Image 1: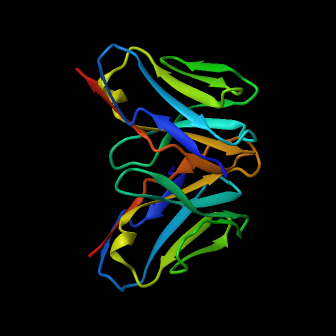
Image 2 (image 1 turned 135 degrees about the vertical axis):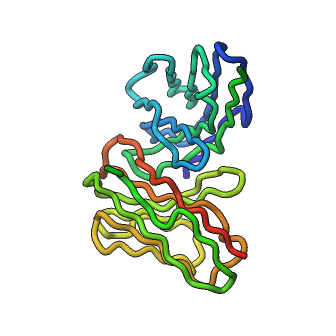
Length: 111
Length: 113
């Protein structure tokens, strides 16, 4: 079955700096890769996603890149703000089913 | 307005008790899930239902029994609760067979004493 690894497990950055979180997956059939942000006491919320026919996607300060050959994808957050502090999860799925999550990255943005 | 709602938000109970967590989604999605998030924040799928039919059942003790009365509801019943069942349980939903994200509820924090 699918296995998703995520690094780093914790990340501290200064406000205004960029943050990068990397994930790798094992199942070459996986074709959909969402990223979730989880704030304290809440459920994970989708922030951006990418499909396997696309190499990069951007939404304001957030971007995701996908390398299908190497089976890895990354989340990039630019101009970080304190409200970006949260736990971030990557995930992989095949045909929209059986989502497998990475272990999470706790991002702290220091003012 | 709430897309995926689960109740209760907090559940404190003693070992050996039986408890249920309810979940409802108003998104018209075909597939619903239960995920368990442990103290290290790891999200692990427990069950997946598609149109009231069980399609994924990970290695979960049979003390856990999902019930789906209709495609908008997926409840989780837990018998003979154990200390190790303490976790946050998330319900989620998604459309069937398309590359669309999961929509999560806000979780139920279960504490077994």
